[in-house]
Length: 129
Image (cartoon, rainbow, N blue to C red; front, side, top):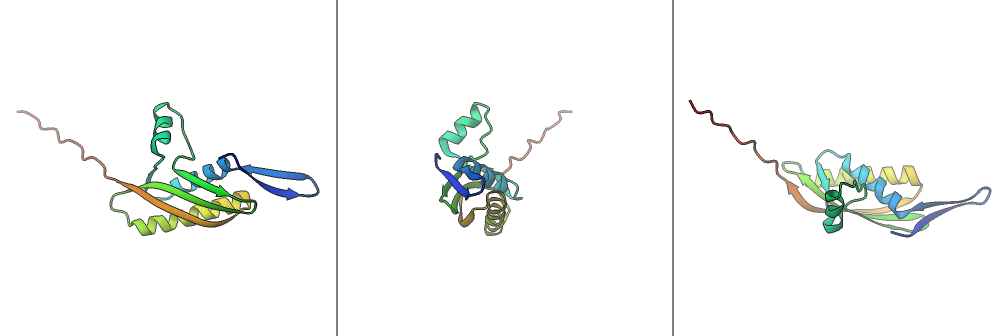
């Protein structure tokens, strides 16, 4: 993610927004949605977790042009949640956050559901009498 989005301001100069910033905004906006358990980042994202680093753009791929952005998100949803409803809410949240914070026009937000989180039931403790 080496590209930078440029916004020209003739009076004062240029503003450059890195792809990593756009990805971080998208990741944070997606994780705020109820029903999203985590972002799925593949091997590199899991390696960062093991090393104790918080990767806020984990599971996010962005393509940023000069005025537009396209976002791909890999997510894990909670069991029992309607996946289409959660995906739609993520799309809305990510689009709004990126457009508000960067001024870029978001042309698409693609959601890739990589898994479903099923909570483990607590083991019942049997007391011996």
